Image (tube, rainbow, N blue to C red; front, top):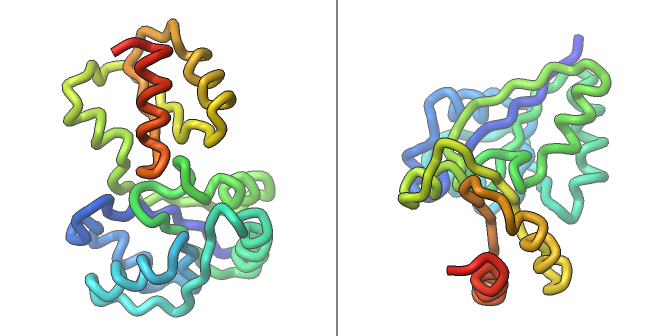
Length: 180
């Protein structure tokens, strides 16, 4: 009998935002796959959860690890995937594993949780009714500028993710190409 994949939303700031359902899934999972085991251990300790097994699942090992986790799910295990903050698969590892499960008919569940994009949009004062989520902008200036130019005529609110060490360059490109 196959196991299942559970995508589990995690707090984007306050660790108390982890839902009781998410804590329950983490405590009963055969394996918890996470971006940074140190960060996830802090979350687990805060909630009093002891994971059976914790494995790293990040951008650098996602392709290889997804195959391993898919085999474990097919073998009957429950795998819970968490990101460092927010919803796995949304600009964080998870998509490849979900795609693999869907392709072979293995069950996938989601335990909703915080999303930085929606949270930022809600407090931004920008029109939230219709928006476009662009994820992370490319690292290289030329690629980044091409992506920004591609949405230049978009009338819906634009939401981007960016890392702290690239924010100044990205904001300069956004201001130059889209205006203030």
